[in-house]
Amino acid sequence: MTLNRETVHCTSLNAPYDAYQPKNLLCSARGSSVLRSCRFLSLLLSLIFSQGIHASEDVLPRGGQNAKEKAVTQQLAQTCSTTDAKLAPAMVAIRPGRFSMGSPENEKDRQSDEGPQHVVTIPNPFAISRCEITVGQFKQFVQETNHRTTVEENGKGCFVWNVDQKTFEQQPERNWKNPGFAQTDAHPVVCVSWDDAQAYVKWLSHRTGAVYRLPTEAEWEYVARAGTKTARYYQDDKQCDYANGAGQETKSIASSDWTLAECSDGHVYTAPVASFGENQFGLFDLLGNVWEWVEDCWHENYQGAPTDGSAWKEADGGDCGRRVVRAVRGTSILRVCDRLTVTGSSPLGPTSAWVFVLPGLFDVLFFVL
Image 1 (tube, one colour):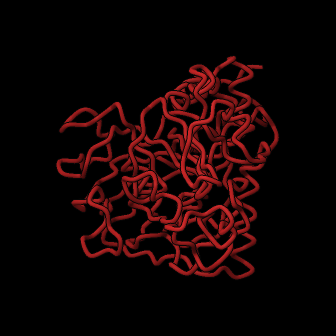
Image 2 (cartoon, one colour; image 1 turned 135 degrees about the horizontal axis):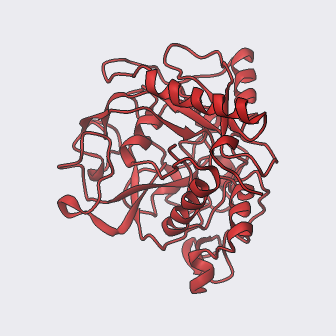
């Protein structure tokens, strides 16, 4: 079975979002060759002619959902739950725009690597996957390429949380097929390194005829903020409605220095993708559930960071021996379990693979078309 450019087409979902919601698109592999080509073209046109969100615009963080909004969430979530192996990841067209990257100096619990805050312009539209890459999607890649992940090759296994010792340890038997807790094909894939993520997007590009890559850190924060200027795209007391983070369900395994949310989200480990509410761009799990690889190399702060949305690599002292993961706050990997903001980042080696109990673990998530 071969996928090519014609097999990746997009149909509009017409989700009832506000003026900041970009056109929503579902990439699939159905329809005639003519229809497939037309729908692929519709995605390109929607990207070219879309209008941007500017840093001056103020989008409020999301609160509790009413019945109509919950119905929209369910509709969007269904686009990520297909079992058809022929389908590429569901993508959402994102408009260009400007935003303030990083956190202000007066933000509570701000870390030094989150500044200085600076305005970034995203000059071109792009498409990004609506949901995290799942076990099922990664399994298809492995089956077709016989790919062995980094931890399978080196035999060292993932770093996992030892509940009894309340510490992280590397266990040789842990990998994406056996992370130490139950997962289905609908869960986000874990225990994959940055190198594994690069292998996946290379395969996806070859299989579809389109160009996929990891997002830059700036692109990631742009879509995570979704027009908001707050630490999270949801109200602070609504974590369990929008993120799989450290809630009361984790008391049995939590270290004494973890700060748990007062609510319970029902998932000690990973949750199936799109189990929680989407952000203002119609994207799921930007905060919580799993860590998310981006293209950039690690820098100690944003001094001299690009302002055009491009990946920040070796320039200005970049350490490409450590790659950036997002969806967590702070540079210490020991802090990630209990703190979720759109500005947090951490450094990990490109061959590293970790499993976390909360907000989950990290893996390859979003791909830019």
